Image (cartoon, rainbow, N blue to C red):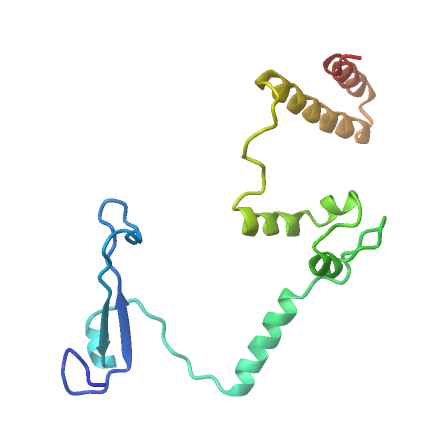
Length: 175
């Protein structure tokens, strides 16, 4: 293929251009007409156009093999990460797709967050709530927050604060 600009050299640089929606700065939707332009140019003409690019680095097979091994090793599951309660490892969680016990939620938290973000584009529930009124939902959220604060107070041995939090929890729970 010959360069479309100079009409002399072999075209080794191939560019595909898609127009952007000028209002939003994004690609046009499927409903609008899309005009895709392909350009085939030589490296010297591409250099004159000041196109964004990466320099091609020549790698031999051994260098590529080393890069692949490093990538595999860095993505491998941490064999040390094992639940002390149920014995589940990160590799088991990834293969089964289920957790073994309640402790696993905290132990594998960073991996769960990444998984939820990939699956749902969120790590918190933002959908509809069951048929509870707004006051009941707020009360349940407050109870959950108080329980977390109570656990922290007990862990820090702040027993007076823990007693106050316990009493407040009892009041909210109606007991």
